[in-house]
Every structure is written in structure tokens, then in C-alpha cells.
Amino acid sequence: MERHEVVIEGNDVAVGYRGRHGRTVHEHLDFCLYRGELTCLLGTNGAGKSTLLRTLAGTQPCLGGQLELFGRSLEDYSADERSRLIGVVLTDSTQVGGLTVYELVALGRQPHTGFFGRLNRYDREQVAHALQAVGIAHKAESYMGQLSDGERQKAMIAKALVQECPLILLDEPTAFLDIASRIDVMALLRRLAVEEGKAVLLSTHDVEQALVLADRLWLLGDKRGLECGVTEDLILSDKIDMLFGSRSHVRFDRKHGVFSPEMEVKGYVYLSAADEILYHWAQNALNRHGYFCVEQKPDGDCPCFQLEVAASRQLVVRMVHSTVECTSFEELLAILDK
Image: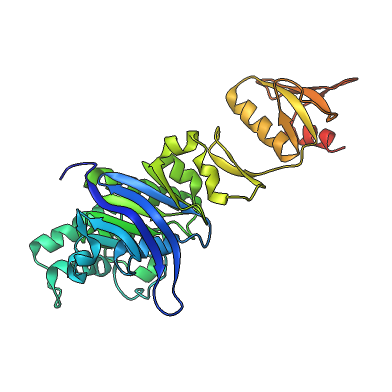
């Protein structure tokens, strides 16, 4: 097994729906997925992320171009062959509350055990390994209906892992999870990609975690197709902005790695602070209220003032005709809102 081996590759791929009322959702898509890497698929609602994932899984036909799994056309694989090469985890809730965690994960061995699903020693070892790898071995005898959302998602990931597939596709695996569970699941997927040598592709709206943990990003725009690359390359080349297209009220902050709304400019501030943390949160408060930090005053008549933030969190506001001292941002914002 070679790390960074190409697992699935697409050239000039078109995805969409066949039939009388069929339509092409995207075309001219080029991409690669590699072993040992976590790739995050980002896009707006309705951009076609699920359509692309189903096409990669072989459950929805490719409308055009070349789509190859290990150098062989995906269409040439039988359903049984695909089940041993591609693991899929969907967001849709499945009615498995009556199964124990162990029983659910063991179902992932079906591509290897056949119709009767009898587990031999090796199969049981793989189930145990998967449960341990995702951190829910202690829940093996619990019923799925007794698990938290985060634990249930880990069980579904273990089920895909036990298939021993080199490729795992996940459709919004962190949807409906709290922040701690989202971080936990994303970190788990990154670790599985690296330690188990999997190519892991997941769609997500959790941009913050994707920027921290993804080796590569796939940015799927409504009309601009697919942009692929190493995370930092896409950030520094301003490609992230393509996600929202012409929606000018949303901007990507490269410095902090977050999207934020465009705010009406009320004024400008010369900001100085005792450290980077104080500077960041002072800037955050000012931006929210329409004041933007500058090094020199822009042209125009917008008011401008100076704010100094000391290590003691003492705030000194120097305006044209007065100087005001505050002991909290609550006091400062009350002054600015007058």
C-alpha cells in the first residue's frame, strides 16, 4: 500500500440525472483522491455535493468523461466489487435502533462473508479493530438507540471501516452534531485516513474544521464547477470566495479562516493592543458594530478614532476632541453606539 497513491480519478466528468426529465448538474470536472489523505468537499446547499458523492460511489451513473477507480473504469466494477472498495456513510438516519453497536458494525463485513454473514476469527478481529479505532469499543453491547448522535456517527464510520475499503465517502457526517462531537468526528476521520491509509472524502458545511484538518479541499460552486487543491494553496489564492459566487454580502477572512457578512462602514479605527489575542477580539467587536481597523485614514468623511487596549483590558478611546477610558468592551460599544 503506497501512501498518496491515486485511488479514484476523474477527467472531464459530468454528473447529474438520466431519463426523460434528467439534467446535468456539473460537467468538465477534474479531480483525484489519494490514499492517506482527508479531503473535504465544500459547497452551498444545492450545489450538487450529494450528486457528486453518489456518482463516485457508483450508485448514480456518470454522465460523461472518465471516472476511474485504481485505473479501471468505475462502470466496469460489479456491485460486489465496489462494496469491497468503497465504503459509504450517509447522513440519512437509518432504523437500526434495535441492533447493538457490535451487530451493526459486523454488517460491514457482509461483502466478505457472503449472504449468510457468518463471522470467522478474522472477521471478528476486524470488527474489534474498527470499534477500537473509532473509540467506541466500550459501547459494543449497547443498542444503537441508546447512543448519542456523535456515538451513532462513529458506529456508522466503524461499519464502513470494517469493510476494509481503501475509499470512504461520507455525506455531511457532522451534520446535527454539537461542536465537540463535530471536532471529534473530523479528527477521527483525519486520523483514520493517515493511520489506516484510506482515501477519505466528506462533504461538510463545517468550513472552520475543514480548513484545520483537511489535506485537500474540493470547492464546488453553483456554476463555476470544481476547484481542487491543497487547503493552504486554495486559501492563499482566494479560491475560497468562489463558494458563494456573486453573493457580495459574504466574504472570506483569510487571516482568521472564517466567513463573515459584509458590514456597513460607520467609521475607521487605529487599533493597538497589548497582544494578538486582545487585538483579535477588539477587532471582532469593532467590526461587528461597523468600525474597521486601518493603518491610515481612507479618503472620505467617515469618522476615525484611535483605540488602545492594555494588558489589563483597560481601553482608551482617543477621539478628535476627547479621550475616554473604559474597563470593558460593553462600555466601549455603548459609547460607539451613541
